Length: 423
Image (cartoon, rainbow, N blue to C red):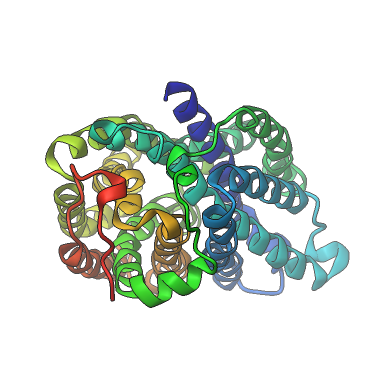
């Protein structure tokens, strides 16, 4: 289990590194480089628009890779998704700017971001299921939290590279070529991830299935549509919180508040370190007290903290911004640390790879794709304290709280015995 969990964590960290490095670049440099004819705010909105395309592609990736995961196994999905995401990320670092090839530059950016999202849509389901279906029922929450910790590691890698480059290069050097380096690094990381995953065994639960679904998506839509919609709505707050902290606030702090890139990245990264380190502990609590209670607690905490978070951000003071980010990410981890066990337990094994991944990634469209765009637009028409952003995030948290309230508890029932919540 330790070797399997470590390989799953490394793989998700690499794939989310690829995904997050784009978000950081979108907040810092992609607007002026690829949309130079736009105003600064409009350029940032356009860059966040290409960022959002990755989230739109993720449910499609979960359908595509989920089909093969339910038909052919979880392990092949991990290899194929890592190859696709890694190759498209390296290619982003090679796209010439608008000044070199004109409108073809943002078009290429859009296509490659779509491919990134397609690959990541398949990654989560394969990595989490391979771990969850190997894990003993009494410790499924703990072991399944390892791939859930991967996004934090990937974010720290992506922003650590960005922070190092930002601190050592001039603004002109960073805009000319420095921002491309993290994308090229993705190629080396992908090769390492493929080596780690080459020796993983197939899920024993998958091997026990005698009658595989012919068209998993059709069965999910027919028998689990309500569950998919509820999980998507429930998870939207987690995505909204995470990308409000890691993407929108980065652009807001540097452009509106005049805080340096280095300070903003350091504040965000420090909060993510704490969040990532707490992931296994929170997951262990879910093995003892249940998945659903922790999700409800995290949602309620998010609803109460969004206004304080934007108020602390608006101060521009590093310590206060860190505290604002930390409170938001503590609410986030209380929900998302348990999802590696919770979502697979909600679906029957024959359609689990498709159903769990589609619900997870649809939540990304609702929360992750829209939040940087909506928050940027709301902040533009507000005062120094972006209260409109706080209201928006609070509304998303209350919506997700209602969805979580309608989902059942699954702990301590074994994965194979859980009855699906049908429509």
